[in-house]
Length: 328
Image: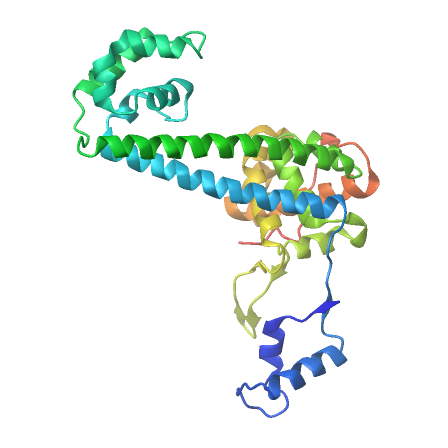
């Protein structure tokens, strides 16, 4: 099985007749010509635990997207019916805030039951509930300017949303447990968890997107696979900006960037490399350029750990490779 890039077909369409015309008679000839010349790629379809892990990662993304949507719906509900709620609780997902919304929902109901009743509800599920917080909640509820019409239907809507949120959260936890079990079955994948700042979910995305590491002979192939290889734009005396190609596994590239933020916050060796990139005397990099360069460095580390099965050694993280150092 092979795949032909549609963009290549578009670019090659004018080679024979110097015409941008497109038709059902012309396209098969162009495709056949490209296949004859070997301008196609073999399709890699992961199997076994690699495919299982890839499907789990996609399912987790779907759950995350749905949880984000439900979160927005709850925030919208609070904006309409209890806008002052955020002055008492910074996050509605906190334990005390969740119980208050689950048990009493509207500001009118909270004001009616009083602080002691709310405190008793918190004590059923919390070790040290705050009476001051309960009193502040009741005081705020009494002065709320939220909508009161249609509160009955609004409460049912909130309860349904919170029930669905709880269900999806439970499904997310179960899925992450299965992801970890699957990840540990893949050779040397657990070694990646030794990189400080890289969590289980990030490692699962890396491994699922890369697949069998044995199909890569050099880390530069892996960098190109992620779309982090450089592309130039120059002609004669004109020198355009050098940027990354972004032609590769978008999910892998995005996961590398997201993982680099906590890595720079907690990983001493990568943080020192980042500072070196920003402050070196010759060709200092911007923050974004340095992060992209370090994403390439991280891919090289991942390649070494997966292919050699060695343990992660921070002392060996010394020099940033230059193949993505100019990326914007």
